[in-house]
Image 1 (tube, rainbow, N blue to C red):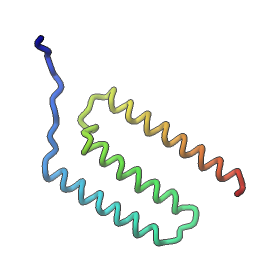
Image 2 (cartoon, rainbow, N blue to C red):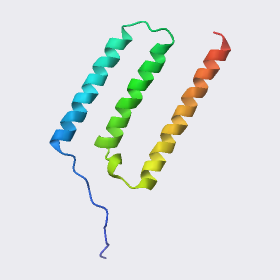
Image 3 (cartoon, rainbow, N blue to C red):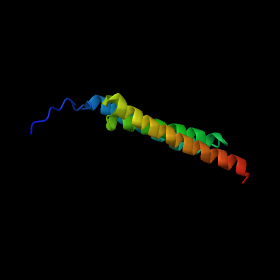
Image 4 (tube, helix red, strand yellow):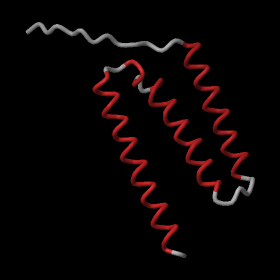
Length: 99
């Protein structure tokens, strides 16, 4: 019952984890700071851009997606693309509803 496991686990270094943590904290601070500024319609775009950036950092490094095979990366990318399409459809619906 011996199986050949070719998949190696990647261990994130403390330095890399610290850099990602600092970036996440800076992006969170930026999110809070930008939320206090009235940018009109750009508020939503800036908030979503910051949220997606933080999510990508978490997925790539803390969920180790950066070190996965291409198939798994493509599946996650397609999920993000589908989510972006649904969010975009929601914005178009709200824009043309006139409410």
